[in-house]
Image 1: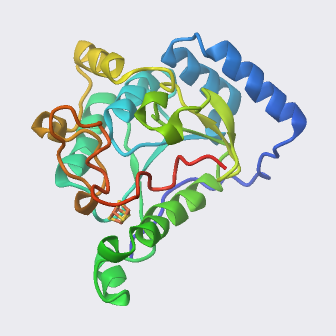
Image 2: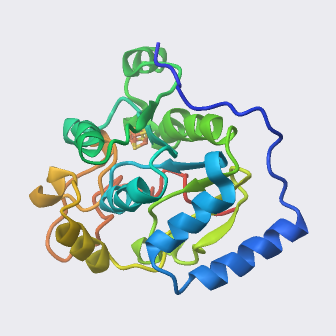
Length: 247
Ligand code: SF4
């Protein structure tokens, strides 16, 4: 059975007090004009070991790891290992470890893919992707984040309407923790320019036409002119797995 190796610091969880909300709003405003590495430095200084980072090994996550390695390389970083990721994605974990000395922890659901599909009489991603994402991603991230005060993610405002108002620093009501998005106000071209400039490892599937990469059953390559997230849950109404939906 898959297991979790996330930390479990014995401390009460952060409360969404008015003082904390005011502090986060002020920090977010101040950091709006800061470089992403300064945002990461602030997050690490403010939350220390109570800060974690989630990554699906997208270009933004790899870039944040590039900076994080020089700011606080011992930060707990995790990947939601649904059991449905591309082998190219999983191999990136080793390349990140070799380059930066950061071993991203795989955080998995209680059931393997085989057990899960047996229980539901087949792959749920075909018939009920919302439940599949809920069981294989949301439940897992809730479990991990319950041990932390703050998490960092690589979302950008220009990726989708759901992400358009993401603050640099804010309260994540869904998971009851602070959420830091160092690249919220960056564009796709800025991210790729920096990745190529710094020779940051990235998923080779991006060179084969994949824009945004998630689980293989729910990801396809995109064609010229398509939105970068058009290949996710293509042909369905679903646009997000639920990790980054506010409220
Ligand atoms: S992205 Fe697809 S396969 Fe992955 S958890 Fe969601 S529905 Fe399941």
